[in-house]
Amino acid sequence: MRLLRNEVDYDYFLQSRFISGAFLQSSLWRNFLKKQKKTYWQTVVFKDDELAALCLFYQNELPFDFSYLYAPKGPVVAYNLSPEERKEALALILSSARDVSVETKKKKELFFKFEPSDQFLLQDDFTKENDVQPKETWVIDLNKNEDELLAAMHAKTRYNINLARKKGVKIRFSRQEKDFDSFYFLIKETSRRNNIISHSRQYYQLLYQVILEHQAGHLAIAELAGQVLAANLVINFSPAATYLHGGADYKQRQLMAPHLLQWESIKKAKIEGLHFYDFWGIAPEDGSKPSWQGISRFKKSFGGRSLVYPGAYNLIYNQNWYNLYDLSKRFRRCFKKLIN
Image (cartoon, rainbow, N blue to C red; front, side, top):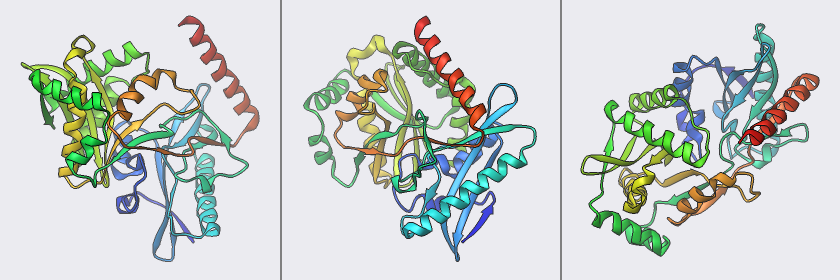
């Protein structure tokens, strides 16, 4: 096997099988990192002339000139490799990340955080860490017809979809910059109400710009008489459409706009030839995300199934400094709970 570091597009490799969140390793996300002025690297492993593994990772800064490397939903290793070849490909990627930490002389990387696509990639020297991207997600297979999809839903969900229609709620799909303000307002209000941390306006704006540039998604908008009731950001990365971010007007919740909005988005994904509709994260079974319980019930009411991934792990480079970092992180978490 041979290791390369480049910026070539390998989206075909990521799209060859369904991995929830594979777009986080794609050319689209690489361009998003570039717009954020993040320092990033893309490492690939070839077996003969076949791509065997891919890992896009970037640098996150910490206090006192420290930093760490992070690979969202990566590395991704080819499923048709033997167990020994998988281990070899992973070892090459980990060594490449370690080389990067040596090359970045201005920063002191404490660890490499990654989210392997498969359980078989885990090793004893990896340290389990709090998940960054959702460990568990909820997906609908779009190989069924509309009647079958509706039949798989909770009866109350079907009722709410029809109720929203009767109330006059309309759905449209937008790639216009002018609709961003409504989306951002609703997502901030929803995050505040549910005590969920959201991203900055610049983050969402840059992400929307990249999606538009790649023609890889849209805003899904529910409105009534010109008033926006709910807005979702959907990203298309074959073979799935992913409901990545969204918000709704709580004061107008009786109109059931989010139910109709999701159903029309599912139908649109099916028409566009995608095979899965990914609701993104749901609350893990271990109860670690209590604030996600309500939205998880909503997502599950549409029918479908869960997909569970290993989650986030750290490969620690400097144990002593990492222990201090971990201690400070625990202290901040406890302090936040006290003030809340």
